[in-house]
Image (cartoon, rainbow over the protein chains, first blue to last red):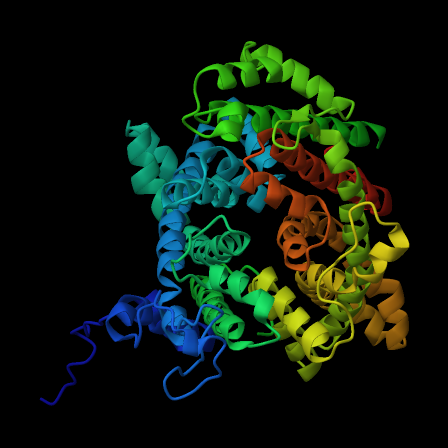
Length: 294
Length: 316
């Protein structure tokens, strides 16, 4: 017998189906590649950069790109390449952790509201709507004015602020699920509310949540960099893209590289995350912008 | 109809009231108060007591909230300890400047976005659409301060067409101000026009796929007739609400854009206020900008209610 063995033994795949689906789309594959490169640079940079990020060399002040300084020097004579390679570390750390906070509280609270219904839901959504009327940057700045800046303040505040829209979106998705029979069955079985939320509701809104998480990550990175640019994020002499752009802006006409290099780095990472979230949305079938051309 | 309008207005009023409560008590719950922020976190002794007495911070929180909120209603936001001037006086001109900037960005950006959105929609997946769609995605994803700085680099430094930073004082006459508002306007319009463009595009595509458009085409009506009579009215109505929502981006973007261009408006003032830890001033600006958002959304809601008869029967 020369029967094929294929149909009976299922081949073990390294990645789950949705992940392969993301990778098979150009936006997902390119986006993921950009992110991986950025993460690798952020992790490895301290070991490979040619200079100390704070070392000032008066000869390199406003230097044009050369063999010693591939991207030239900034207004204090610091190596631009070194600072650009190191510049994403704090931004990536803060934005990733703040995204975690946002997804966790936004996701759980959103499901809880759909589940609680009635007065609690109505009152909470009123409050969320009111808070969403404050542009996020002012929301964060209101707290920075009172508490000062620093990671310990920014991570929770950014997380709370960006979690508000996740509450809305997850609540809407959960409202669809909450009326289904299996939820009724779980409640009839006498499961505790927390068990129903985590075991029955959560898996059913996970797709929506994942896409929101990816998008929130890119907004968060944009948010933290904007705060750095305004002087409320990373503190000098930490190399940070937003801060570097703010610092080097006044000398743009003398040497554009100290501004352009961090701009390209920051924009490429944000675009990468956006591409990934786009691929993720299409793979999971929760397309945020239907029929989009690109 | 009247009931619906009253409903919308009431709901906006409730949102506004909740917002006022939040802006006051968020600061209240934080460690420290206006005086410790002003004098330094570990200030103690007589100076702190005198400052608190002057600011009325020794009164109970509810009483202070009543004073603050009722003052805010008539435009009195108290005194800034850092600037030693009434907040309303500091804010006055800058509010006008921000309104000028926001209006010119809207007048420039919205028609352009609608126009290109329609083109992208009817030329779906054609090269024009590809270019417009990817440009708008790029404008949406690249941070405002990056695109604004690039604009300065290209149009002010390389080409020398216009000045990169605004040097006009806060109380400059509008004519002077407008002259140096071109780049900030473009930078601000870029981001939110991109959002509107994408919304209009997908809305146009929805209508183009509808049966009544197919019917009109089968009847052999000329395309521009179909476009004017069927596609435009039906696809632009939903866009009105989106325009209201993108005002949120506009108002948030104001903070960054004004700082980049040194524009003397509320956004840059808020950055200064936060840097100085001037709490009363910060609270005032947050409240003003958020109110602007709520009012614009109410207006666009009412406008679409007026223009779109189908909405009037909804739950009415």
